Length: 177
Figure 1 (tube, rainbow, N blue to C red):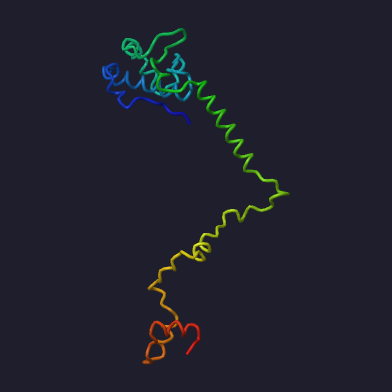
Figure 2 (cartoon, rainbow, N blue to C red):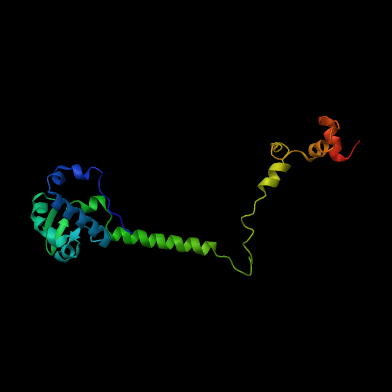
């Protein structure tokens, strides 16, 4: 996918704001076509014919030349300052080649020899929970009120029997009387 880069104040520039709406549309459509086709801002007669509204907007070419937004060159027109804001075809090709090489290096680094490393299924397993709970400075988990201590539930089920105090509940859990 290609992108057209323009200054955010482009519509307010004095050369652009003096254009009619139709001339502005032709200029912007041509810039988009140049970005898509990577023509470095060069527009031909065929390019204008291929634009969706090009045949209807062709009559506004003199306004773009007069406003010095387009320059007449052999074989067509050159959009003024197009390459000041957008990368050239050569720069885009160079970037794509560099990206392709970088991705190949990454993918080759990720491949494992099946004889040496037969399984990768456990590579994302962590011992963080075990480490956290067994660490001497770790805090015990916060009790969850929706999950009451089983000893207290058992004591409540004995109808009317006195509940053990906090120290007794520890002993009751261990089976001490």
